[in-house]
Amino acid sequence: MAQNELAQRLGVAAVGIPVAVVVIYAGGWVLAAVLAVAAAWGAVELYRMARATGGRPLVVCGAVGAAAYVLLAGALPRGIDAAPYLWGLTLGGALALSALAILWRGTTGRPLTAVAVTLLGAVWTGGTLAHGVFLRHLADGWLASVVRPVGLPSSAVIGTALVAFAVGLTWINDSAAYFAGRAWGRRKLIPSVSPGKTVVGSVAGVAGAVVVGSIYAGVVLGGWLGLPIGYAEGAVGGALLGVAAQVGDLVESLFKREAGVKDSGKVFPGHGGILDRFDALLFTLPVAYWYLGLVFRSRGVPWP
Image 1: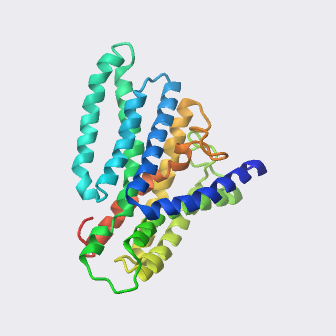
Image 2: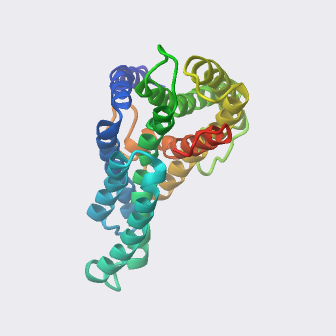
Image 3: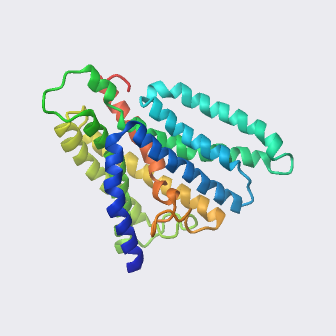
């Protein structure tokens, strides 16, 4: 990596990380608004790639739909409350897009591809990033129903720590895979999709997520915050998130290869577009939400 590019990446991280922590800690509508913008922007980047392959997605409809998923999570931050409305939004969106394609694409505008790609973009970005809001508020209902000893952290701290579990393990996976792959990687993982990824890097990424996930769950989530999770559950979660992060990265690489582009956009200097930064999180945020929710429920905590 060139020094100039490395400096750009470090500069973006130095500004972005503190801002992200503040936004996540605030939660609610603040977090939902930021993620809604990211979802809409990411959907537009996907549609731009689709257009490079000859597709004609309904860009405005898809971007609005992507933001709507996240804003719905902001209004109903408990996943179980939002689920029926999320399904209604998906079904209603599919029907509405199909009807609009009659007027806006006709028989010669590749209507089937237009509707499919538009719906994919909205769900792939908005439907997944909505889980960042759900994860942030995962323990709120439970905390409101139990008596916790004085001095334990607030729900905002706990919610931030839960999101950090997903985001942190995604970063650990990426970093471990990158450095191990550069140092020892020889055999390529899937060169036709991502020429730079190696088998050694992939294994190292998952291993790093397992180790850090176990320690973080046992010491921070279970020990300090008093949540019903331990070292073993953290290790399993690390394995799931490590695999999910790599699949998410490969999926975006696959789309970019078809479109013939290096980056999805140019939002972040040295980092590319929204999808280049969020590709793994689109997979790890939902996986973290569902996995941690199932772990908590197995320990007697009501489904959030």
